[in-house]
Image (cartoon, rainbow, N blue to C red; front, side, top):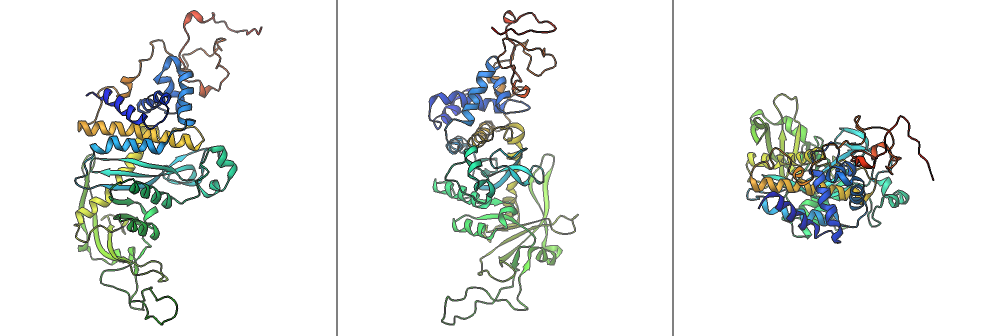
Length: 469
């Protein structure tokens, strides 16, 4: 079966989750547009390329489909998984990768926009942030859960919520709470209990790590250098004896000699022979490697000693030879018997989600949605992921990059007419066409509209006078 027929079957599979049959054309048109090599993958340029002779009508149809139609983005992602996951090989393990990504935005009206940290910019700025969970194996990864983070001032503003269409049932939740809820939903639907990977923005939260353990999930999550642990061979004293009044003591006791230490101090205290050079994956030109050490520790909670005695886990430390101190710390509940090579390999699978975001933004228009509403934001993201997932499945089927000299999606749309001139092009006359009912629209909303047949055009003059009957 060719990829064109598989694409049609894929669209039919996703369409079963949309409800009304009249949404099927919107699904195929939108996903096709997202796979085209366009500089901007917002609704209008996609409509103009998918259906150049009826760009205005297709624009309206696609806009309604993504921004207004009541279909479930979660159901679309569920069906995306049903299509892609059977082609993924989990024989060497699987991972749940948690992360968030930002979309720079101007203004204050787009849903969830606020001044907050934007990873894309590497600083605080006006942006939207979405939290996702990806399912990964050695061959690749795919986002399977996606939700916009709604800052607290947005969550508590009924006027802005109503204007943006935020669901009434949605309440403020931190990014870690959103991620935990996403994982809980996946597990309740029968998803496997793979190891969870996350950066220090999530891993530094003790409650987050404990919740993962309570769900029966192993983890390998980043932490900051200030996190405090009991080093190897050092154990606190047991809780004070119960005096018969109140609750029995549970807090381990410390003395002047028995004190935990920060993971940075522990790393600096390790001998040089504790570190080994490990190659953890094949890069573009050469294998990627680093200098690592791993020791068994217990997390000690805050410096005030308010935490219970916790189980032992791995502290993985990366310290490049050209750096004055370690650059990364990871806490992991992977088995005590795991080798250092396997521990590094598992913990560093998190790079895949960075590649996902890069490809989704650069090639599938993830950040190009120009609407302001909650529904459109999530619909657009789920369709970007759906387009990405199809080409990922094709790569797994063929075991090589798909497509030939021409993008697969380009082969699904009609060629542009030879005399086609996009609106806004210097080659297109700027004089207003009296037959053009959209001529008064803003310039940015009139790009890529096909010319009308010459028989319908009046002869152009230096000045055109419009007469109203």
